[in-house]
Image 1 (spheres, rainbow, N blue to C red):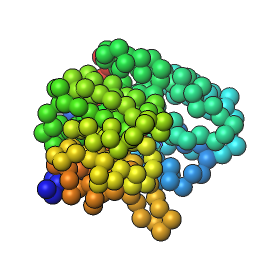
Image 2 (tube, helix red, strand yellow):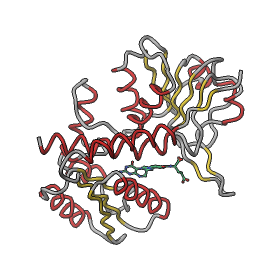
Image 3 (cartoon, protein in one colour):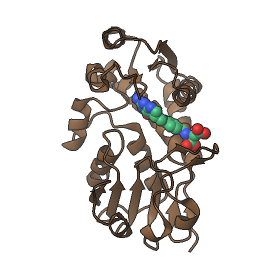
Image 4 (cartoon, protein in one colour):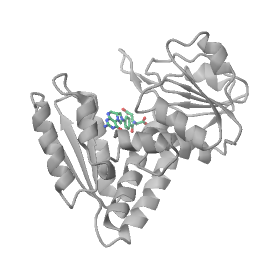
Length: 280
Ligand SMILES: Nc1nc(=O)c2c([nH]1)NC[C@@H]1CN(c3ccc(C(=O)N[C@@H](CCC(=O)O)C(=O)O)cc3)C=[N+]21
């Protein structure tokens, strides 16, 4: 079997068009502020891509770049200022943060109704209890891709590889809400390949380059690769050994051009939703 490619770049472009059309009819510009602390070069590229995508759909978008020496108190003061600014609908504090800043304190300081990352404990709790709230962008993007790929979700065995607060856990909650039978597997799981082989839908989000091999995947599975790993030789690869796995599965996302563009499109979707909810 040779797998169908799930084209995240194309699905994201369609979603951004829909968002642009909805924004054009609003009569105001949803406001997004991305806060960046320090000079992490990879973060710089992502932050620029977010800002560009937000401006293209008609948002009022700006990046606030703070020095690497910023204290936790200074960052919390900046977040408080954005929380209080009526022109701001969405706040994203780019991760990772420098070591002197506790990320959990900053995440909890963002007003939940402006938390377009969906990382605030209130939004995480709403998701875990099946109530509406702001949902983390990457798992939300994966659900869009599964829908676009025509995956049958109710009753399907879904395996999520990874248990981070930003991808694995919310991913499992969204699949559960879509009536999948969900298993979360991680570094301490016994016999990871055997657990992954049980999956009809496999979502890899561990951040280990090409960890998922061809013999980890069942014939006919749908495989979503959340990993974006830059190798020493400059190549960008996912958490899935693409060629090996594509030889077995029914459908697979590429890296780049899979989940990454969906993350940005869903950030825009969350910002529009937050703007509509806040402004009535
Ligand atoms: N508070 C916070 N929220 C985030 O959502 C967040 C963050 N911090 N910190 C960093 C990660 C990373 N991230 C990506 C978004 C888009 C692509 C993306 O568009 N990738 C393209 C291009 C990849 C490339 O060429 O480098 C692709 O996969 O095709 C990648 C990575 C969001 N993050």
